[in-house]
View: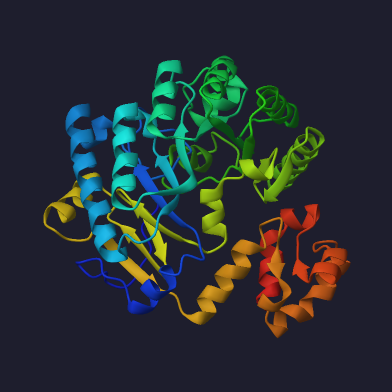
Length: 409
């Protein structure tokens, strides 16, 4: 698992600087709540998220979930004291881990606490991540009845040997059934895919894309596999048992994804995300990309309010112990200065279909724009007409290079 970043000491009472609270109060940026559920039945070999099996925690399910729910309730009450309760919540995202290792009733309880403390804005988006084998029709019906509006399934691939390398346990043949069950409950459906797995051919990737499209989801995310240090996959690569993902192969797979998804009526709205309609965008994730405010509750969860970012203690027992002692679970935090906030704006907004306002680019970066247009990385017509910096398809492949140029690095 990755180490938490360094930062400044976070106050024990969780207090935020007045400037951050002033920025939060007007309500002109979205307010989201992220609920991190750190439990998984098994740990996938490629995953470095902050997750734990019950065996790793040396607890039975009832004890682990009971401790978790009590601690999250305490953190949400802390958040309400720090932020106040005058703003409603625009989006809630239950991620993990595997949130659906908790019962629908428990997930509904988490959502109920958010409603109790702040209330949900009209039309609020409430998302839950799920593995295809972690829910059935009754569970999906219960989630919809609890107020969930959207489910994001970790499909990853439709090809058995690719799933085996990733150490995913679900049967890809079951996916259409569980997706139809979700749709029958009135839930919007998103599918998450991974490309670049060792041993995955371009034909394999096409198979996965076509299988995903056949399920007619509302939203598809496709991410290039990153071999993270500390994972079993990284150890396999280091020993020569698996090949490291090839950047050129991953570029070919991204282009194939964009081609097939666009032909099927999807449109990209962020480099790794496509949707059938504007309404089906992940509004919670857009809050991240557009610099909104969010409070992340749970072990290892990250938060951002008004230019202040902090992150919680990672281990569930350490997290719960801080809250039981009446303290904030934050391990550390950082207060972003004006230059850091500008850099983040460029880094994140350039990844979106709406792009970056030209007036957000410093003079050094503006000097690079002509070359970026000439190289086919930035849409010149959009730059002239709308005065926004928007990536071309080629530019999406080289987004990091574009960012470095725009920041004058």
